[in-house]
Length: 88
Image 1 (tube, rainbow, N blue to C red):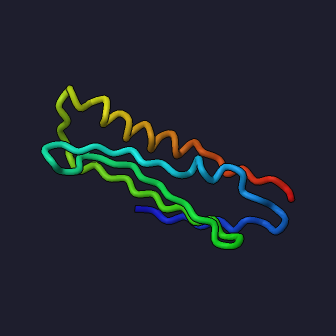
Image 2 (image 1 turned 60 degrees about the vertical axis):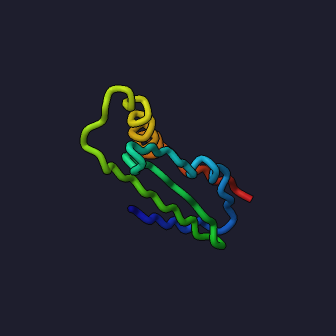
């Protein structure tokens, strides 16, 4: 789990906050197997982002690979995101 905080400069507005929210997960045998969940809030000028990435299973059967890949790809996609600000 990681917590990030970014102080937005005066006179700027966050434009792409919704892109920071992701929820990809799957389970096996009634138990969580892997997940990538990110949430965000804007408190005044402070952007707070929480990222929770978990892999509880080391072995994934072939029929579950697509679900596993979705979680891994979500983590990779998140690492490529940029925070977009516009001047007020």
